[in-house]
Length: 318
Image (cartoon, rainbow, N blue to C red):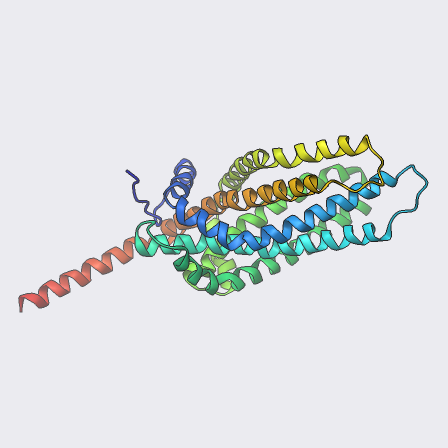
């Protein structure tokens, strides 16, 4: 029997981690079904862009050392495909976040996971552009901060340049912690970007390292699962490399091999999209925990409901 989950509840680190898996398990059907339907267009386009990027890169690699000039079409294909894929991931990532937040909302309203993809979509349509706008602004802010860190380390502290990579990863981690706390504040408390950021910083006060630890642990699990989805894709790439190396490099890639590239690429992208719901769910559940610890909103609502019931009973006696 699947037990219900109380979202607005103060949880320890271990309870937050356990609650993440409980929530994903309980809502697996509507969650993964919604992610599948709503991210499929991004999967199809992304598969085309990635495959086109890899094919163009592979073609350029074959001409190295042969004395032949690089094909300008392949060079342009690499640039356009890379830019297109990055832009697509911004839209796709926002969709995944919007779906996860909407599933949380549906579950909180109904008290169970017996809701449909249509109900999820109604809520996704209301918050998608809000999520995309916030992700875009945070992305720009991180890029600016990245340049601020990169330039001094490169030109002023060249001997410490080896520290720049871990420094960037730490900054990115804290940025994601803030983002994944501020977004739920925006959506569930209906605050603006500035107010949500202030509330997120307030909730995270004194909990920065535990929050970062939870995110890192969930991302490690996420990446471990992604390895499974990536095995067919990279195995086919290696097979393609060695099989084409034995024939004339001017010969076109066989149609069946192209089909496998698209198929395994789609599996990898779809798997990564579905699995990304795990760290998002964990950070959202953490928001509910911190919010309840600070504001006791669930306790207050229960007291209000109890008061209303007593008033109705008193009126009934008269």
